[in-house]
Length: 282
Image 1 (tube, rainbow, N blue to C red):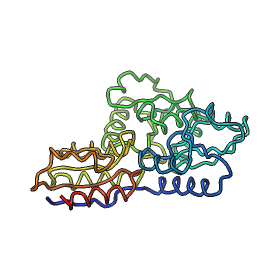
Image 2 (tube, rainbow, N blue to C red; image 1 turned 180 degrees about the vertical axis):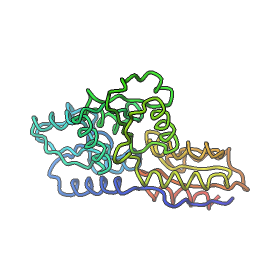
Image 3 (cartoon, one colour; image 1 turned 90 degrees about the horizontal axis):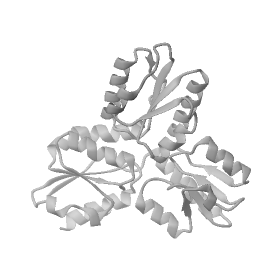
């Protein structure tokens, strides 16, 4: 069996930043530390911090007044910030700087009279936060077919923004169709797809055809990890999303298999190396 580790892979700068912030908060905390949503979408990272006493919540109702609350890398809406402020909750912001940039663009375009078509996965933490920046101005779409239902007059100023962890190829197709339907559509100053996400997808798109199987280390709720597996499949290679050694699809591997191993932007390198070592051992 030949196993190749893709490069780059694993933690991006935004994930590293969020994890380091939470680490420092935990070290200096005098009481429980709360995090709004998972700090990043990875089961190993979340379990690591739970063992340190961190409490992950999906509602501010679960956070005591004046507690310490960290906002995850995916960001939150202004409404959540306002509610936390009213209750004197001490907030620490670990939002990815690129997500902050998308939020800023949403506010600025809405203030300038634009309607914004936001390309993203409904219900994803990042998407929920961005929609909250200008709910009256943003329309969410998730796939090409959603464009059919969009209606804007030709006089309406129009732009688009997108979730930072989308598949670059899929996003480009949607943007192309939007331009065809709405000639007045303006490209944003920064489209928003994360550079780290794009680089990882480009590598898998280029390498996957030379392998029999692609293994992507990442959790099922990690959007960028799922995109890596999708990119590999679009390149014609079977791909499997795994959280760790226990998820390796042994029935799909043979002693002659050529395996390409990569990881989503929120997956720890220690888990990647554990998978690689296990494959070596067998």
